Length: 219
Image 1 (cartoon, helix red, strand yellow):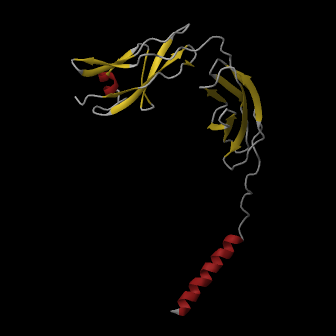
Image 2 (tube, rainbow, N blue to C red):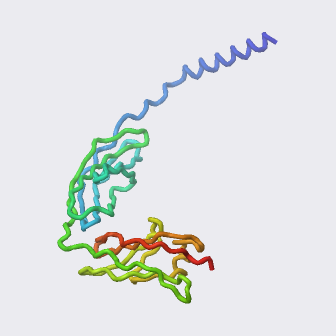
Image 3 (tube, rainbow, N blue to C red):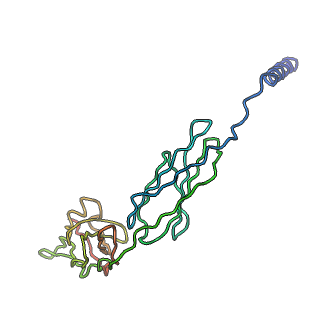
């Protein structure tokens, strides 16, 4: 038995020796992609901008981009495969720096390139906070939620929140309980604290309304 095991060990050792004696494996890829060039900001509005750049190249033929934008809450990085990225939810009248670097799938990264843009500044006041948020009752049963219109020099729509979570959007100043339940913004039989917010042109947000607490009928 021990002779059999010894023979196996010798055979394995020989195979390892043969493998080691073969041609050297290809060297690991250590060459980074080229640096992105031509970073340009376009479509800059109060809260939105697009940044594009010339595509990088890499000896492997495959790469992606790490795009970082500075925000008041700190830098935010996203990964994209195409040489363009759109930013939304920006703050009006603020300057942003965007940096881009190319990375291949071996982990090699180019140097970063960057550009700056400034969103348009607001020149007028935001919509007023919706007032008089209230339940609408029919024969003693809650059938809807309503509020008074905001004042704003432009188009206004509204978004309703239930316990701080987005529940409904509308250009009207009311919503029915049926609409909320069918859209799964709320569940029948549960109690919620509602607030509503006005949205002016170019995503100009009002303050939240005063809250109201209502129980959604179970039937």
